[in-house]
Image 1 (tube, helix red, strand yellow):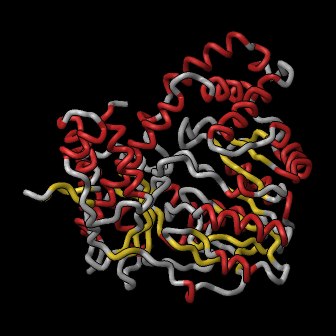
Image 2 (cartoon, one colour; image 1 turned 90 degrees about the vertical axis):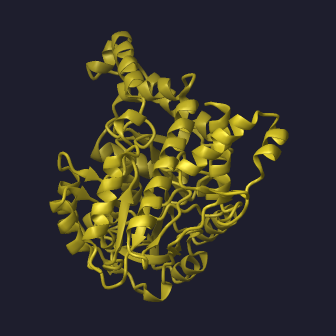
Image 3 (cartoon, helix red, strand yellow; image 1 turned 45 degrees about the vertical axis):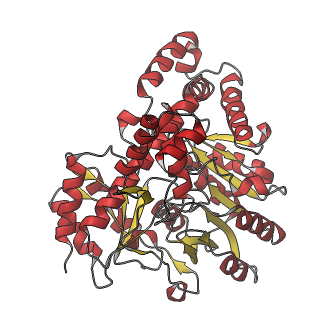
Length: 468
């Protein structure tokens, strides 16, 4: 990474974390150059990168300022939440939306996957070829002992230590994706008819899992900046009727928020004291625009009550289908569910991932990917600000690469979705992120594609489809 890119990334993180607020003036070019012992041209390059991301603006004779957001900040009204658990019923509608997301030649704001050119596919191909030649037994469905599985688990342990916490080697279970990790965890701690506490809005796949397993959802108010309400979680778990809780603490999908460490500690203590299992999805932990990678709630739980789930689909490849569970005290129960449902996870792919994760330059890839996705989120957000109705509200995410957009309340987003699909544009309507059918005027925009005139044009066309 060039020096100017490093400076731009540093300021992006500070702005994303709210340490530099809209309207604040940045230090002058001369001052920054003196402080960092750099040339003025290097500093100017960094400021221009920030300007291209839509984060700062130059004011004549005054300097650079953090750009004001023209849209009102998004707030989730907790008073509108359903206070009782509800049956989930989104899968039938979701299937049609997923089919639309797969349309060839459409502009895909619906799929939260990075563009292929942002991922290390060439390195993966070389590793597969090399390791397949060395370990033919793995291709034949035979084992080379526990080495492949242990290599992958050891890589997870090393990465956790780099992030400031420790996962134990003997609690890791390799899975066929993060989705399977979440499902196995739910199967291990719930029974049909149980109630599971979820964020609101929450990732639609979690709701689909609850529906398929005959579980009820209890929606908890979730702040777009600080995450799930600890007070609401406290109230929901007092009477013993909540069997489990499932959260995305870092880079929440769809809000893009990070739960502050103090709240993470409080959640870990609260759920542990009440023996309510916490299933934590940390798939976006590596794609957070903060100075340091945020730790999961798991890192603050010493009781083994938190089950950590993740995969590398967002930073390596969505087609690998390898994830993991750090199962805590529920290792035996989750291992049994894994054995009963899908058996062993592909040992060759585990070995490939271990080699990649431990290779020189992998962390550089992750930093570059994080920077590119941050730029794409910023530019998409800026285009929404410019083109969408003035009454629109939008998140300002500090993690992940999706935007949550609230249109004027009388807009029917399902109808807008049909019109958009006809125009070759896809997204996910907001009500798919709620078990109780809320957020009918909201939508989620994924920002996985590199910015281009085609993206700008699609957002402008989408804005014209919004009834005024």
